[in-house]
Image (cartoon, rainbow, N blue to C red; front, top):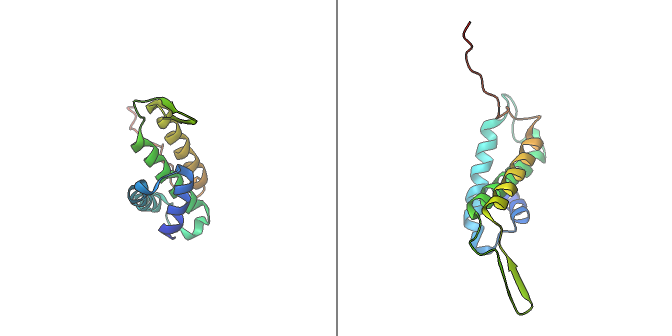
Length: 122
């Protein structure tokens, strides 16, 4: 899998600017390794087809959204230009939605991440 492909997809998903590219590239590499570790035994990234780079890109975009958080300024207007910042809650919601999409893409190939087993007293 090409980290460059994942980075290109993540840029589109996140709307990352040039100043955010180094962070996004590191997040893409981390997401790629994370998904490789979550694959079912015997499954490779190549077996996942386009789902793998898309899921890694969605994960990296989610991590960038979470890192951005939300600004203190909710918005301002200067002449004909208007800028609105996301609140921390909106950034968190966006990150969660991106992660859900990544999990849906990888469901056939990955070990579920939400399963936990606890001992039961008899």
